[in-house]
View (cartoon, rainbow, N blue to C red):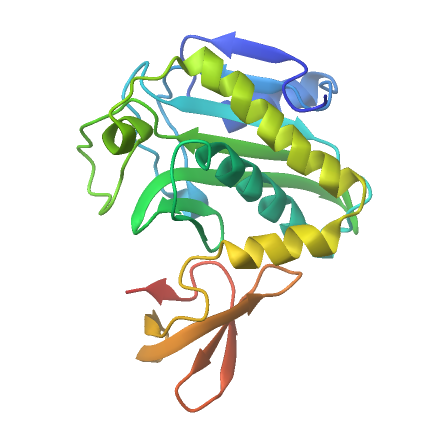
Length: 245
């Protein structure tokens, strides 16, 4: 077992990703080490967004990985792998679990988890990858302006022990990471697409040109979202270049 082979707990941190990176600079961490906390004073999401989490209610952790076999231009496969591991865990309890591109986890149309990836690159090689995960577990009230948060407790009515489910989630993530290690790239890619939120469904989107009807066709190896419009033209988008309406 790689992911979860070592866990380091802190009562509170500014950000598990930030602290994980600071530890890494002081000395190479064992691969799969998990830094977890019960509260973040400056939890971060994608592209500078914040992450709301009530104290002692949710899973907040970061994982250090060394996916040396993956080239920098293909680093999005790490996102696919970790996203699928979270889906595997949630499917123990719930149905209709989706990955909203690039790496938010949805139950139906509500967000239950988010992932923040921060990779260190040396030329075309990945020196290390940090996957920061926030999973809403026992929180029932959300006060931020996030439009659609939900949690395991809201959806199941069950209160979960955070340490217990961290152990189970670690195993599910490790199983997926083992697939990556054994170069099962096509399997990971196919399953990522099968879980993709709004895949092949006509929906409204907004880009720099305005609002349009489109359907998601795929995600490239570089992590760009492919959407076809009603005229049959296919567009590719990077992070924050298109909004889901």
